[in-house]
Image (cartoon, rainbow, N blue to C red; front, side):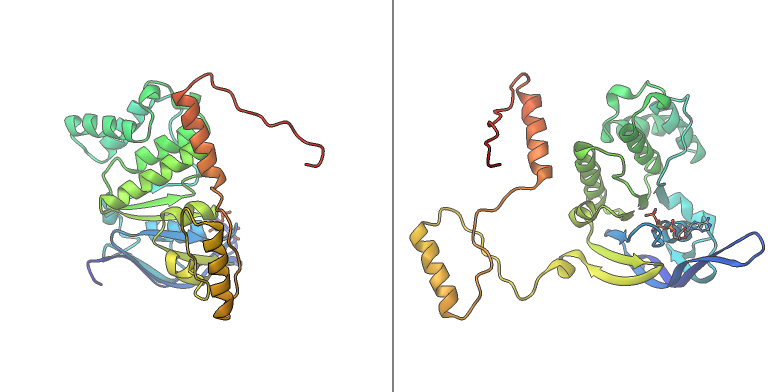
Length: 299
Ligand SMILES: Nc1ncnc2c1ncn2[C@@H]1O[C@H](COP(=O)(O)OP(=O)(O)OP(=O)(O)O)[C@@H](O)[C@H]1O
């Protein structure tokens, strides 16, 4: 296995059985996958499609029914690989009575980190996930978004090379979501490999290099996000300051060449961009109120 392949699955499959050993659910059908060093890889699929099962098999938290997962050249069930891995589960189980500093310090100790390294790492992570002001508050007082952030910090305590994130943006508001996505891209910039699973398609589209789409435990699509989303038979032109005459010429040109003009209008921004710009503007200029247009009878 090449050094550049961090995860390889070979016909990896999982059947959950009941107490009597009878087949209950075929959660993952034979899956062959290779994940490269330094990429952000997204596992997508509707509820119950096998995303979490796949992540747990890669982590070695579940035993495969058949096939195998190889991580850093070792079988996923080999615990020595875990030092190089960080994991953010769908729900983090943290000690409610500890504050952020104590929580991260505790996990640092589990990795046998020396006190000085622990102090520096805990401080850097708390700042990175935006919990500086809440570092002394007990986790039981944290909101869902704050809990997600401390969960991510905990997953990064050992400075892992491979980070597995289960629904990293669930429970986060649009600002928290953007920050989480920026943090994922920052990890990629540091050369880390990130595998995330989500059913929030926009989030996956923004950060992932490649995706796999699972449905009912079966791999349905695998490839680069930009390639999968390219509509090959449509050409898009974006231009600024085109006069009406020029626009008419373009229309004529398209029709002369037997092309079909699908759309030619002003683009709109996304609701995420609009929301973020309003919040940033409000922080920069507190007290400014919205210019609310009166609702007309025909709207
Ligand atoms: N411990 C278990 N025992 C029995 N069946 C299970 C168990 N864990 C998961 N399953 C089943 O396996 C299938 C895949 O579940 P999995 O949690 O991997 O899906 P998922 O894609 O992560 O779903 P979600 O988006 O809802 O988190 C589902 O049908 C689920 O009910």
